[in-house]
Length: 157
Image (cartoon, rainbow, N blue to C red; front, side, top):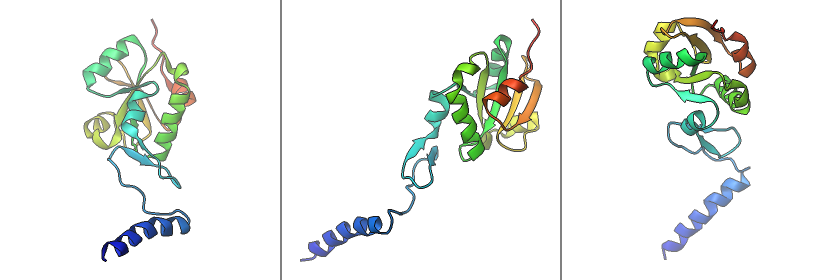
C-alpha cells in the first residue's frame, strides 16, 4: 500500500523539524510583512503603519501642504525593512499622545523617488518638516518621539 509511506513522511517531517530545535524555513508572506527573528509571527506592516498610532499615509503634495496650514507637518521617510525605522514607528505608537499637535506623514522610502529628489533624501529614517508651500523648514535623520518634538520648527502666529 503506497499511502502508508506518504502518511509516514507527512508525520515525520514536522516531528523532525521540532526535534531539530524548531528551526525551519522562514514563512513566506506578502510584501508588507515583517518576520521577527526567532519567531514564526508575521505582522502586516501596512496595517501597523496606518491603522495604529499617529501616522497619516502620504497621498500627494497638495494634501500635505494643506495639513501644514493647521499644524506642524513632518514627512517621515521610512522603509518596512529598516530596523531603526521600525523602532521609531513603535516609539511613535507608544507616545502617540505626545504627537497630537503634529501631522506625521508616513512616506514609503522605497517608492518615493520624486520626493527624495525634492528634499535631498539619501537614506531612510529621515524627517522633513514642510511649510504650506511644501518647502523644507527642517530636516534631520534618525530618532523617535523626543527628537521629532525637539526638531520641529514652531510657527509664529
